[in-house]
Image (cartoon, rainbow, N blue to C red; front, side, top):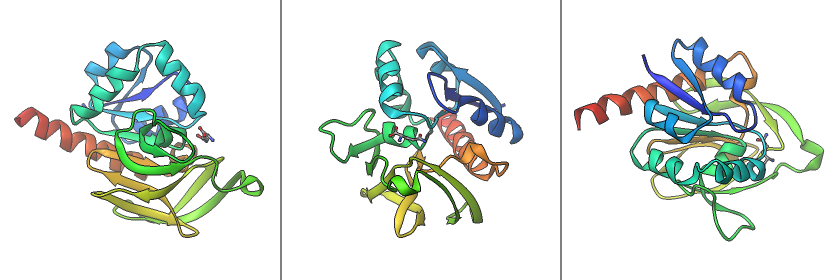
Length: 197
Ligand code: GLN
């Protein structure tokens, strides 16, 4: 069975576990870098990117996470996780993992819209998708090779760059598990092609 890890340092971990299991895949809460060796894809959850980064450093996750991505295994960053994946963050000199070819801006929907829901059309995933945004970042620009999957009010809120998937919102907070399904399919495909190589 496909095993999907959820980085379990901080944030909405349990909700992601539920949406993976609802799709019939196995979920693993990843608390130690060694656990990365045993999974086919990894979700970086929403929460607080600066706190998560501190914990990534404290538990020695930085290099293992980069190597995980570079090995070709899929990673899915949601909200704060998207910020961790991005190659560029507005106002910062350095990215965190810097694996996904996108530029993001934190907390970019303004204070009056701290949290809100919106109906989105997400390419290859869903025509009508109710998305929950909480102090969400948005994707300012998608680099070469990155495909825009969804926009909200003219802002990019979901994209895919090779085996990296990212969205601004919290797909794990509703009962609509279609994005988790899409990510599990990415992990299945990567698993099959890495086994052949
Ligand atoms: N505002 C948070 C950050 O910058 C992200 C919010 C979230 O993950 N819901 O890290």
